[in-house]
Figure 1: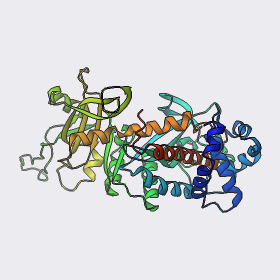
Figure 2 (figure 1 turned 90 degrees about the vertical axis):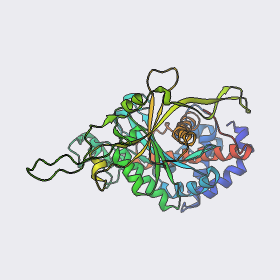
Figure 3 (figure 1 turned 90 degrees about the horizontal axis):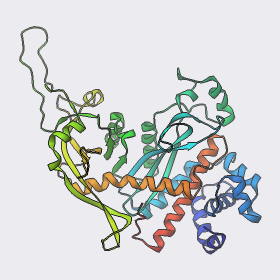
Figure 4 (figure 1 turned 30 degrees about the horizontal axis):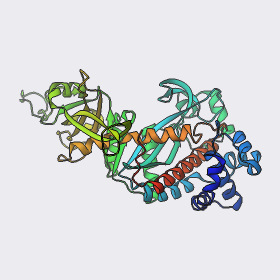
Length: 421
């Protein structure tokens, strides 16, 4: 936003900040929180402390802003809870979406920075990785919780611990009780936290980085959530109509138990065996290109195969009572122009669930990509130059607040705005 645009909505921004920052113990923290939000919202190439302070004019106290974001003792969870309550009302979420994003770094001094894979670069890169939880519906979404992923090299209790990185933990302010936790477990931890705030959403969505993990899917089921999650082409399963049988007893040793006689197949093999004729056309939302729909935008369209299958694997079997593996949906996107299916999802939604709704939910993950793009390109999500654990969590929380404010402004002007990608 330009300074003039900021001035025009200054009253609304201050009211928003007063609500979200109500948990702060001191008036000074509330003031600098509101100033930091203005810095994030004001147009500028970089949204780190120094350039923001330069753009904020008489309110641009660089030292005070740096202290507020890096060392001021405020708990970001309290702000996130307020943000979640506010955005639950505005977004009316049909799902929580989990994902992670990379924060590329040149040096090695920032908390939890390490060579690791990130989709931001599409390769292994020197970066931090943040895991986020978003409340989402077709018309809006908001990031309301975050975790900074701590690689094994930063964990003193890990056999992969790096002495140089362990020595930097104190400088970075990483709490002693923080160790390496897999990203899927961080996602479940955030789910537990948001539910402790009173946020209850019955469906979870994630990509294959989470969906391939049986423990993640089981964790969602244990918490009473249905899911629609991406999976890799190599994930294995039995057909839905497969049944375990008891092999003939040969009279030696223990009597045999019921089991599936055929080996599980990859989900790709199962869909290809069904054939492209099983694919049905589905349109799930409007895109950004001109088209012939009532809104003048082209609708997103592809072809999909939906099968009932029984996912295989040791963790699934150990969690199942009896020999019969649970049945669920396998959804595969198979465009008419492609020789093979290109994307796969698993879902434990009911057997009679409509294909069009299943596709729409599977494709709802675009909202988290939209959020990341807005927060990185316009609001400086990846511009934090501090090195501390608290500073990172403070910054991403305030960027989420700035993004939420923009979303509320957009919804107020056009409640049906879907912000197409």
